[in-house]
Length: 187
Image (cartoon, rainbow, N blue to C red):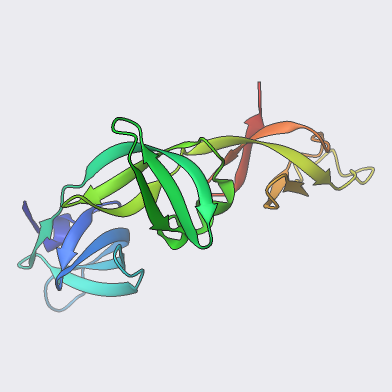
């Protein structure tokens, strides 16, 4: 499906210069002279390159529709991750960099969503939020509890997050995987 350069939005998957790109940020600019344009920051889903491109309203790009499929994470094998198709039970190996920084939150048996372009996996999406146990949390300094200050804590997977002062070591919390932020206590 063709779309105008000024209709590009964050999260769109587009075809540009024979590659598949995911739009990260956009900025609509209308200079005093000349026509308006859309400044687009995007990442290549095949090789991870990032680029900034200007699209004018006369430019058109091909919007790509990706198929999604549920897979289950099994285990890591070197720098490759093994996933199993939930329907056919087939296993596939994918490079860990397909997930990015969120790989630290990957757990055995976790259900993930693979985005496929022409049957080829190009990205792996973890659940937005996961539960984790805090293994280490700094003590609260007396007098700091009046303000809404946060303190650093380390999760069982080694990731550092900022948590409210009342959260202690051993507490199970909910964490946003992509923002790496505290959401709340796990129920």
